[in-house]
Amino acid sequence: MAAEQPIPIYTNLTDLYANLGTSLNHAVRWNNLAEEFKRRFGRKPAYIARAPGRVNLIGEHIDYALFGVLPAAIERDILIACAPRPVPSSSTTVEPHHSPGSVIAENLHPKYTRQAFSPSQKSKDIGDDEVHVEGWHLDINTQELRWESYVKAGYFGVLNHYFAPMNASGGEADHPIPVDLLVTGSVPAGSGLSSSAAMVVASTLAFLAVNGKLDDQKGSFGAESRLSKGGLVKMAMENEKRVGVNSGGMDQAASVISNAGSALYITFFPALKALPIQLPPRSVFVCANSLVVADKVVGAKRGYNLRVVETLVGARVLAKVLGIDIGEKEKITLREVVGRLVGEKKGEEMDVGDLRRVLERMGKEVEALKPKGRAAGDNELGVTMDEMIDMSGLTPALFQEVYLSWVEVEATHFQLYKRAKHVYAEALRVLQFQESCLTTAESSNTSGGSSVLQNLGRLMNESQTSCAELFECSCPELNELTQLARQAGAFGSRLTGAGWGGCTVSLVAENEVDAFISRIRDTYAPYRGLEGEALSEVIFATRPSSGACVLKFD
Ligand code: NG1
Ligand code: MG
Image (cartoon, rainbow, N blue to C red; front, side, top):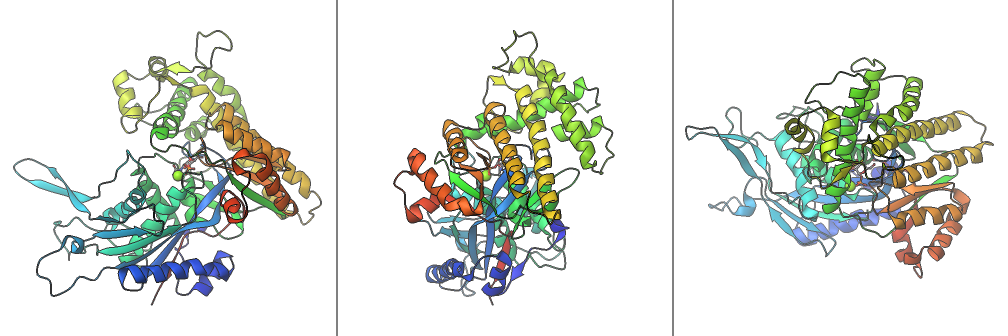
């Protein structure tokens, strides 16, 4: 099982590149980073952690409803070089940068300035002048987009899973060491290629490695003895929530578990599982950046986090309508609704055929979520907060506690019907996409190749329409760019990632890629006049890359 494998640790670039499936020419980036680390910090790095971005081929905004998705890791990645900072033994006073776990973080990109921070102890007053130390704390600013927040998010998990609070009793104290680190990245930020997950995964890995926790066979405080890929995914998911986004696990799983050459079918329910998927021969995915940067902070309140709430409330209302028993405080997901509807056993996963059938049925059942008492066609606005609370069957106070207390959202109206309709149809498209790839891979006869590509393309186009019309996570530029891609010969084209800006992904025949890119350059206004590197920054073909790994220096 892919998710149970250990995180690869390499000791030389030749082995590392053989596994990455990329040519050694790229090693120059790794060497430069190591050299620059030495120049800035006066010694070699001990490790470089790598985590790739990802492109989601299909299955948008359904991971947090716990449905399977189909992304692939891309070659563009985040690299973090790191080393313990030596503490001079002669010094008698404790300098702040020598305090346990203090970090100096630099970035090769001049826009991202040098940061120094130290973790502190989080404690709770338990009365009688007694204080209970709960764990490690790092100040993470969730109101502003700051590069070091992602570094801190990764670190937070490592601190709290692997190190006992400082004054905890018993055992020999094991403190995090002071660390210097240097980051470089080639995943464009805010573009739907998940630079955020790549940052958090790379940071988590770097702090594990530098603290000697990665190949720790003895087992550590509160953590498994040998971290598996699946374990790292769980940590990175938890960590990314620290930055303020209630994400599903797609990006972290794609960044960690992928193997070169295949996409991944990732399911989250009942447990994280990843199946490598061979894409049809001679098919290429082209990423094109709309150059609209999605606003991750305000955007989350009116976009991403709002969608998380809408899909969860939709699930509760559907469960009620379908006579499914749920606890008052239970946040049932749309995936669990179908599981309980067909009597799926706890911990077991229903057969794909059964899942397909129940998803088809849900396409009709979601009608129950349409706002009541509206004139036909007057559904557009959705329901108000009061109507939504009423539909949920909960008291306002309970509703607030279950659905709104842990997340910031800003909205006057909520769309339960449209969101759930998208989720069930999109989940069905993922199954169809995956089956289509599997049957092509199994048959040695490739003459049907182009009809397979057409079929995959059609599913991608339907996904785009649904994202635009039902999930409302597209934007005019993404609509235009996907349309231009189809006119330029793509089998299909859609937004990838959260949307509201960022990249599109288009399925193109291998021998058409160059012509396709030229056509887009000539027709998408923001690209006009771009050449060479400036062009390949915004539009590029990509192959499925391998997942996160660590290079260890001796
Ligand atoms: P982006 O914002 O593109 O990294 C987000 C979520 C995913 C998934 C997609 C939509 C995070 C870290 N990732 O991706 O889990 O829900 O949107 O399919 O928030
Ligand atoms: Mg992200």
